[in-house]
Length: 442
Image 1 (tube, one colour):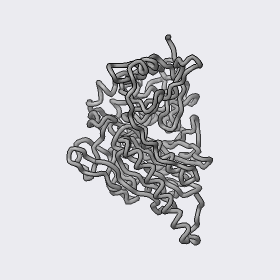
Image 2 (cartoon, rainbow, N blue to C red):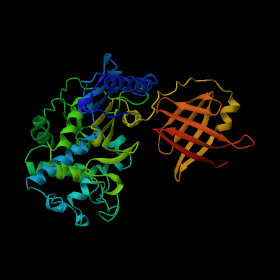
Image 3 (cartoon, helix red, strand yellow):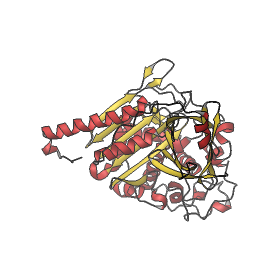
Image 4 (tube, rainbow, N blue to C red):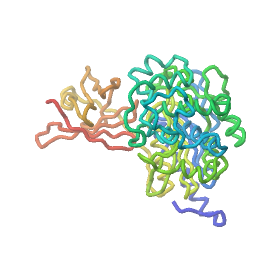
């Protein structure tokens, strides 16, 4: 899409903006039509909205619709607020990125001797993440804990690698950063954000999403199959994923962060430096249609979110969903790509057809997506079922003889046959990716 300056905001530019809005709406509408997306979407160019709309229900029991003003739980978008808070403390001379963690966390074990604040910020510390503890969410998600109690869940475990040598996404590291913010500031994490970020920037619709706090216009979170998401005590995500916000507040935040209103431009450059795995400090760096994009996604019980900023294009995309699934990330990427000139079309309408039992049986089997990760497919009566390693089973429906789909997780499975007509592999289409898998075990 052609980039127009303020001085060239002619009728043709307005038509281009209208065309973008129409195409964006058609695309997001197709996700909502298929039951894959409820939430709110905002695309801004030069700070002005190109597309802004709510979808579905904020509360399905009361039929309260989502709107652009609905407040959503953010999940890991929180991490960039934590990283910026640490850098504010760096600028005040109260902490250094090269400080060993033990300087600000006296209970640090000897094995953490080489771990610095820098390592926590860019997920290269080697500390095991508490969210990777087996059955953590099913068995411990209702237990209220302090940040120190959360850190101690894994602090006596061996490091996964030498600090700085590898990347491993780590929620424990960000909870520890939150504790350090509290220790240095003398107040709670949420109090620090309110005083130093939310209030100065006028982010009136953002805050810490405590379970017991009355939050006006707060969305309820849902599972992909339409149930209320399992309870999560919001002490647990803390500085790794505890915040709520709106699409408008997040767009304002992205602009303020980039423009030097939160931290200096030199420190923002540190946040957006691609260290290992293209991860900076609470932000990831990527390219969409050959344009540089900075952002982060989030996933937490009942919510998936995405915030993207293309600095050179002055483009911001915010997608907040109160239903778990891949929609938020895929929609955000495609709406950015649409602005960059990609021909983004609505999702095709998938209509279920009935196949005889022998056709369903011909595709049943096990398919290896990667070593140790297998997709099992079998028939139960007239219904084809699928289950990935470590996940629950799901029904899938046929849209063609060798093509099946799941509206619950937004995926399609395409089976491939050899010359003799035997199924030998499949391709899993999900989240904008095409993942091949060979049939095994026959």
